[in-house]
Amino acid sequence: MKILCVSTNNSRLIVPTFPLGLASVVASLGRHHEVRVVDCMFTPHCLEAIAQSLDEFQPEFIALSMRNLDNQDSCQPVFYFPEIKEFIDKLRNYSGSPIIIGGSAFNIFPLELAEYLAPDFGLVGEGELSFRTFVDTYPNLNYADIPGLVWKNGTGWRLNQPEVVPDLNDLPDPAWEYFSPDLYHEAKGSAKLPGMVTLQSRRGCPMRCIYCTTPQLEGRRLRVRSPAKVAAFMADGYERWGLIRYYFVDNIFNYPKDYATKLCQAIKALNLPLTWSCLINPAFPDADLFKRIREAGGNRVQLGNESGSNLILKNLGKGFSRSQVEQTISGLVAAGLEFGCFLLMGGPGETPETIQESVHFLEQYQPFLVNLTVGLRIYPGTPLHRLALAEGVVEPSDNLLWPHFYLSPAVADWIWDYLKEVRKRHPNWIF
Image (cartoon, rainbow, N blue to C red; front, side, top):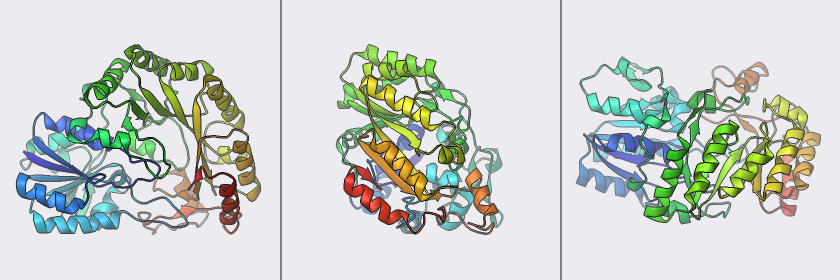
């Protein structure tokens, strides 16, 4: 079957993000079907490029990947999915081929987006295996048998139970060759950081942050790829495209420690001039591991601290304390690792005093970047959603596809002017 895959994301907030999920799906398809890819990140006039591909390629299926719903900005929200709706409507003029939608954004609101966007199908969950099963047997299949498929059942949409890939080692490496990893490697985003390409060594997150959708997307059970395979993939990127800067999108790089240690050892053993970044969770401070990260080429990390107030950390369900954040920062500094931080402000119990406490806390340490977020985007099925319902912040009838934010009334009228003053002192603290 001929399949046209489109990465619709063109946002360069912070950094341009390589479409790793779609590249992984394409890798599973490419050995068995004829695949062409259009990446809107670096394709000017993307719709015209797609129209040309439709004319030349004549695909039997069009697969769209959605990464972002909106910019998660409670002050000046920007919605991306109306653009996807317009995108689909125009595609219908060019081709009668069925359209299927997937991606992390679609995973959060599959039924709502299916109703709004009106594709032919959608796919939820890890699509490497289920999408291939779908196209292998289409149209002679029972829709109810395809894990994660979103399909029309009479007049309404139905969602099948999604699939989780049990062993990541059974999957091929993401198909970078269909994309342009060298462009991501060199492109800068709004944070003006060096470009990089993404990779993933594990999926799943055992933490219980009240606002996060990752457990819904990847599950709580950690699944890992062989450290040797991950290192070999990095070496391949270096040899084929000269890629030397990588970013691990793993939700927690420093857990479990034994796996992270083996991964660092495998990368170090390559003896290549690679540098890389990752996300560190303060719940697992470990000076020895941080040293190993640095020795293996790690040079910068993102620290998922979110707050400097014990009260707010507890209310957000972070699973760690301020002292653990301090211990983590101390270990990172000792290892020679630069670190960026996050401040997620306005959650349950937030006051001007707790925000000032968080700001003053980070000012002690001079991170290379602080990502400021005001208000917590409310996603269905999360503990934050249940709290927002109980407090009357949202109603059961509210369609959360259109962003609703939890913002503590105690800071709502105060925080913006305060953060303007903070940014005057710290230009590298960004919204």
